[in-house]
Image (cartoon, rainbow, N blue to C red; front, top):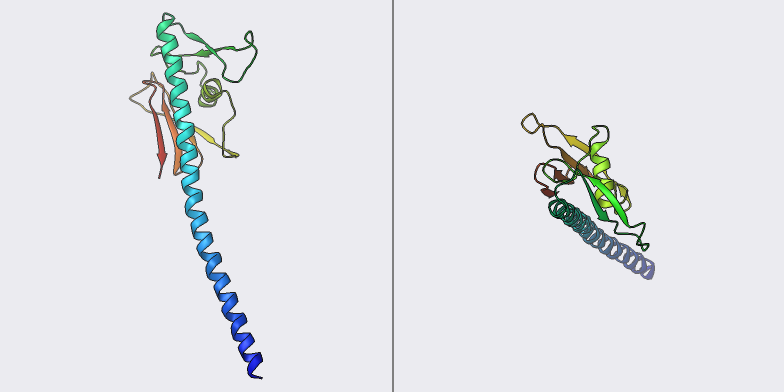
Length: 161
């Protein structure tokens, strides 16, 4: 009878230890998953900023046209590698149409769909009374994590908290 009590006690201790280890692992995983998402968003933000700067530089070099011709990043064929990006009077990518303007800007600059870490990103245009000649686009993973682009000056902000 004592051995049954001892083996039950050992069984409970083992289950308790496994539960504690699983809890520690889950906390560690959850904490690192958030850091991984933030790092990925920072990477995408950097790519967006880099491409915007490239388009703006090309706009300056080519005499400030309304359409800037840039080499597509994902083509091997030299003849199919050029694409045209519409820019505003400040030389930053923008859309002539208001309908889905921010989505159009993203696709023309980033050359891909609005997806980050296999999750869809949502897009809103933040309207401002004071900046009617420029557009502010917010590309969001959720309400706490997003990238914001200002077509007035080409600034990109990465909000990760």
